[in-house]
Each structure stands twice: as C-alpha cells, then as structure tokens.
Image (cartoon, rainbow, N blue to C red; front, side):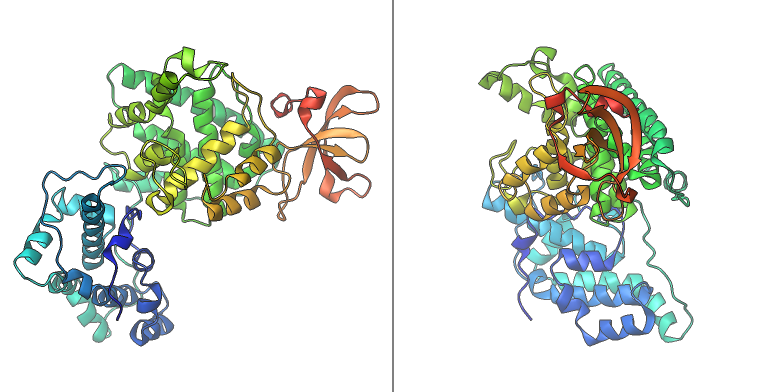
Length: 502
C-alpha cells in the first residue's frame, strides 16, 4: 500500500454540499485503490453503485487506504489559523491540507457532506483529531470507530437480509438553506419540454432584464445597510437553468445584449448564462450547475463600488487605477458577507476568476493546482463574455475571434482541458457569429443543431444591394439551396448582433 500524500490535497476543492462516496474517493486520488478491491467490486456487481452497502464498503476501504497518513504526525491545532484564499508558506499549505484530510475523513465516517460536517463539527473541527494524534492515539482508529458507530445497525440489518436497495442518506443541496425542504421543493426539477427559439427568446429577453434589475436593486439594498437576498438570486438562477433546458440557444443569444450603461449587471447575467452552459458541457449534476450559475452571477458585484470614472474610462488605466480595480474582489466579499448563507463556491469564484494558470493573475498569483475548478471556470466565462461584449474602451470581438484569442492563452491563463471543453461546446461557429451565405446575404447564427453546427440563421443584409433587408430566418442545415460560405467580421458592414436578436 502506497503512503497517501497529504500535501496533494492542498488547493483541492472539497466543499461538497452533498455526500457521494465515489466523488470523495476520486478527490482523494484513491479511485483505483478502493474501487479495484474485490470486496467493493463484488458489491457493486451484486447491488449496483447506488446501494447504501456499497457506499459503506467504499468508506471503510478508503479509510484503510488513509491509515498511514492518519497515523503520521500532524501539526498541532492552531486556533489562530485562518484559511486564506491562497496559502503561501509551507506551514500554511500543510495545515490546510491536513485540515482537508480531517474533513474528508469526517465525511467518510459520518456519511455526510463536507458542508454538513462543517455545520456539525463547527469551526474547531480539527482540534480534537490533532490533539488525539499528539497524545499518540490512532487517528485511523478514531475515524473507523465513528464509521462503525454510524453504520453498525445498517450493516447488521443488511447481513440479516432486512434491508432493500437504499440510497445514501445524505441528500443536502450544494448550498446552505434556512429551510432545506422548502428550497429543495422550489428547485425540484420538473419535466422540461423543448420549445422553439422564437418562443424561448422572448422569455430569455425578459430574464436578461430581470437579472439586471435584480442585481442593481440588491446592490443598492446592501449599500443601504440591508442584507443580500440570496434566496432571490437562487430563484433567478433556477429560472435561467429552466430556460436553458427549454432552448439553450435563446439565452446564449440574448447574452450579447449589453451596453455600457448597465454593463456590470449585464456582464453578471451573461457570465451566469455561460457558467450554466459550461456546467452542462461538463455533464455536471444539476446541483453543481446551479451553484456555478449563482457564483458567476455574483462574482463581479464588487465592481459596483468602483468609481464610474474608472469603470467607464476609455483610455489605459494608470497603475494606481488598476490597483483600485483589483480591489473589486474585496468589495465583492464585503457585499456577499451581508448574508450568512453564501456557499463557499461563490467566494472561490469571486477570489479566483482573475487568477491565471501560470501565476500571473491576481490577487494571490495562484498557479494551476492551487486554483479551484470553480475559479478556473469563472476565469473562462468572465474572459469570454468580456471579449464578446461592447465596452467603453473597445468594440466587441466576434465569438470566433474571442475563442481564438483565448486559445492562445490556453495553459497560460486558462486551464487547457476546461478551455477545450468550452470551445468545443460552443461549436466552430458559435451563436452570434456573422456568416456570409451562398445566396449573397449576411446572417447571424441563432441556433446550433445536435452536431453543434449552425442551424437557424437570421438573414439581415444583402451584399448585392449593399443594404439591410427585413430579417428572415433560415434553417440553413436543412436547406438544399443555401449554405454558409464563410465567417465574416460584422463590423465591416456596420452590423451588430444585438440589433437583430429580439
């Protein structure tokens, strides 16, 4: 058995809002060691992966794999230790990694989410385990006893044939709630029927406006001394996700409707749409998609605290101005701190969406593995929306131009695997691309088909007459007479996608 490397947990996101033994094992890097055992394999073959006895077996084997690490010396409990956005000293890195190991072991022992463990054990969760180890007690035996105490009755019932196929008991949502039942009912996933682009785009336009209004009102409320209404943001993100499921192209299209007057709020809504899209491209659970959408919606709230002279400046920022812009992360944290129930994922996306893989980002100059996956996703959606949006200091790039520019930075600024998934998910001609058709007209791509190729395009300009025409939609992927000749720059013909969406 190889010795588990505790330091490998540094920088790894473990803030799971629900319990999944398979995911915990993957996070610990023990997938093959645990699932490759005959015991776990036989139980999965017999009962399937969702049976509770399989979860218990995985937890038992995982703790055994962690035995050597749990019996090694750990740093003594430090009541003053506070996990900063980035640990910079060897001591801080080790302490954070050891804390994460302890949390994961509690999660395995209790069968509860890491978020649930934090609520159960409190801020001093690592005090007792560290003290036990310092007194020469076996930390492995401590956690194994907890696991036995929490599973004994079920295991006995299973051996006696008195239990059926049961799901693991932890079903918490990935975000805290003052009324978990009410929230889970509110976010219960209904059966979604696809609708046409023409119909859903009207809903999507309304959602864009609602999002801008919600963000603006909430920021003003917090500035006036009131609490951020997180429930309102949860409900709004739920609406976004439902709209995306009915027709994803509608939201991806209206994302382009932005102007400099309400840019900050519009950027927040657009990033939320892109995060929702990215979550589905990654085939994540709905709960992860929801919290990522929420994080993207909120991670730039602090920009409302910046002076308009800076946010709308057309020229290059001075060094002093740029340092102030960097403080929008601090301002954002202050705004979020007005509510006690903000998921940590939101803070990760806030603090890390300007970090870069090569360490050139801010505020902490984190590198690759030190940045959570949420921060890496935040960086991608933030950059793509910024590049494809008109701003006071520059014109918008086309989707293709923006993706080409970002691909150059893949591996330097952006995670290459996530960047590849994002690019592929948008297709070679993303929604909003301007194309020249073989019939001599210019059109904008409104929808993509299942192969992520342009499907419905909106014809808006005639090259022969050099003039605008009445908008005419064409299902180009089903047309025998008209095809796409090439992608063009709409600015060459003074065309803007935002003028032709509604």
